Image (cartoon, rainbow, N blue to C red):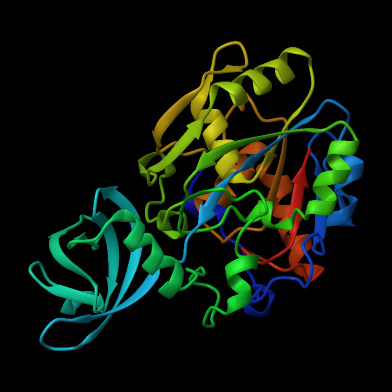
Length: 344
């Protein structure tokens, strides 16, 4: 398949700019891969699609407020730092705005007590900075106190205090993502408790979602696209849970494309996974044979995105095209703060 196969028309007003009032209050489109049917539900109805013994796998990554304001030493020019990832002690990869004004050798002042030096450029147009005379605790304290929630580029407004809570899942424990695993944002504590009462097990992996999740695919031939790398962890305890679920003939239900990519990264022959941690650049697009995931919960994704390609690989691409057209016709809300889809 080619890049143009994953394009579709989306009215701008269907791009959700704000979250729904309560978690679990979104709509839910249900796709049946075997029957090629589409049903329209509410997210709270998702309980009906679980069976006792199913395993729900979630991503426990935590979004941190990655946007910081700084000023250049001597000129006092304002600069925005977007902290992408910690490379080592006091060393960070960042994006800067305006990029043309930030060069190697510049000193950036965040507070009177926190400064960083620009020491290198990155191949993606970013910078490498070194924080001076600061502990990790001091850096993260400044991030938590002064940082701004890194909303996706298609949300055309400034972040609010509400976003600090809503652009986060109830599963979030491990700081490291600059974009949320948005399928998980639909789950409320009440829905989670009802799933547990129904005999559903919960397991969590970690995949720290990077800014690359929003990077466009620029080649028509998908085999030539190179995926961004993201850090993941699957613990031995979680691997045992997943392998036991598959052995008993029960279903593994993945919450979001980040969970799908992680489980497919660590899968081995015989429908088993092995506990691992590291970096994955796995790119899933049709045709692809899934080894670990039986059901997927996801959002509605951008045209020509790697996320839409993964979802199209999980279901029949023609079914996904039909579902997206139906979503537009029925005024579903799209992207991070939008509605949900369950594919079974």
